[in-house]
Length: 278
Image (cartoon, rainbow, N blue to C red; front, side, top):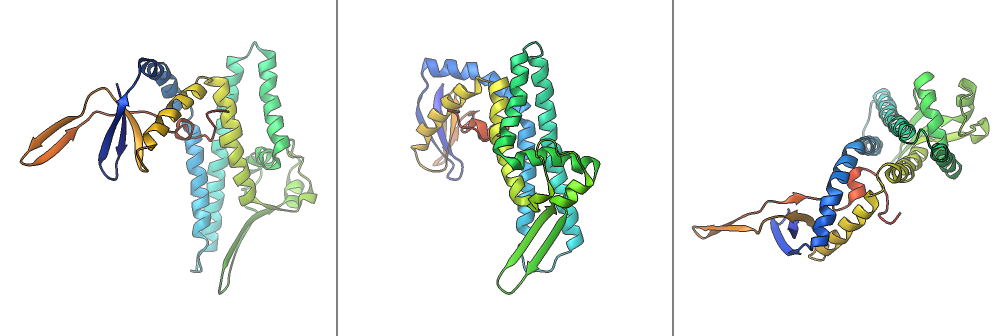
């Protein structure tokens, strides 16, 4: 089996070297683990796509051209609802799986709740959106106030809610301990922080709990990717079982090569933001 670098833009490949027997053994060992994780972590990739849609739509508001404010407000509510519904589904999915896997291990079960409490203590935004998701499901949609201000030199967009209104509407703020003293809440800034913790903190926790072998797998693929990137920017790492087959006909050369798709940045491709050394 060979290590290959392929630059799709230039349609150029480079045979780096043969893989060692140990590297081939690692590939065979990690391949089924990565395949299972890729399927289980699909929800994280959906969450990432939902967040990117939210950010992209907000970016589209930064224009001086006239817009339909009612439609923009509705779209922001839709995108926020989609995102938080997916985040809740992730938490429910892995919480149920975690409890089933460790149902006879009380320290492990306690560790999950302790982990959530630690993240909530570290990030008020994380705690707030755990509560806010319930508010949106049972009370009102999430965008309290939306405003665009356009002048000759800039466009300002604010997407907020008032803590006093939220507290008056609901007492269910168990994790965030929301009070009216929080004042105006910037939903864009808070969701950005919440998303970071979902993809990094929560993603790392469930990866360690369900797929601890992902971390040595990520280090294995990272080291080979770095080797391929020495060829230059734009190259992607692949494996191949066969030597390239070159056919020459009428002065033209055609290269036939069967490439094995392997992770170049394992955790990013799973949809989470975790260091291989975490």
